[in-house]
Length: 484
Image (cartoon, rainbow, N blue to C red; front, side, top):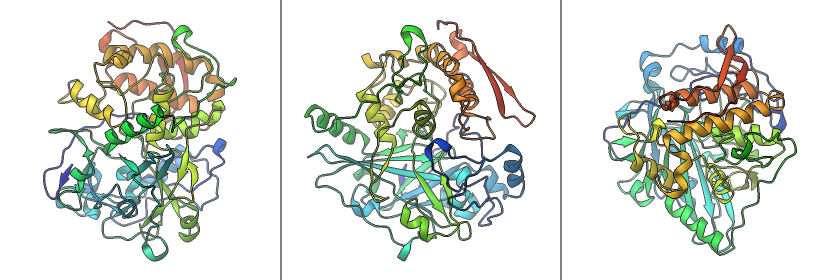
């Protein structure tokens, strides 16, 4: 994070089932949302790596057509190797005007968007996504707004090239979350005081979070807790579902619908949690907000999205299980109900399971120099309203215990609900052939990246892949293990 020129932080981001694939993302049928997709990456301003699919068309991508589209692009060496981008944060980003001012994606250290590949038309590799959640402290009402990210040097592909300012309540408390499909997204303030004024956080001194950043999260979640205590904000219960097969014995949560902090669905993606999507004009490389007005305005638009673990729960797992995520009106889309990273965290805090999965200290995003950092972990968690490392609420998410719970809770859940999960479409067909095998792949990747084997644990999942590497079968060992 910086105001004006300066060195960018660069960190190696962990691999997971979603972040390591530049592939085509299929929107699940259970949502009834059938949108165009962006596939692969492209060189400079060429659209040769883009598969254009008209809005309203249902697609079932395959590994073969993903590979074919990938092979058409021939990125320059600098594009191919670069995984870091800058994003210019507009002045007063927590205000209505700031929310309606586009964020600009550009190359690091003075590189142009075209040379660095930091273009929204290259969104599958280096796309950036911004999401705001808004609290009215007087009433406890919540809403969402999705600020637009454009490639620096372009204009929004909207009527008049402008965005509508949201009508914010008096004394609104706003939090802004950032997501990125690359390794490190560096915040650059439009003015020397932009980032400090908005209380933006990108990591500890000299040790960045990498793909994630936040603005005003601590103040926002403080206001949320106060509204809850006053009885102004009543978070709806996630409920229960008879479709869920209880698992994990006393460790599991029975038929309760999962929230983000359930180990049944815990993943490795704290740096990829924003649920924002944008429309992309494949002919010009311009972007627009994904709303009804702009869908009609941008002919032949495709959808560009982040590798969001929250979207995996909200849009795939919940609907299949007969559950509903916490939603609020989206002020950038005619107040249609929408999810957000902050809403998921609010629900997780209000209905936290007895064994809660928080951001673990052994996740690479919050490690410092390859070592666990309680201070950096606490800094990250504070922006999401989570308990600090070492606090009483942290016991289940300390490195060894987190790994143990991942093995003893998630593996039995996937095994018990395997038949149902296997009926749903995979979020990334190049990774796995259905939702069950995708979640199994993610569990396997999480176990490895978190270094769970160092705690004398054995991976509870065995994967079978086809000739192109997609997971097509998974078996689970549900025996209880103890970390040591």
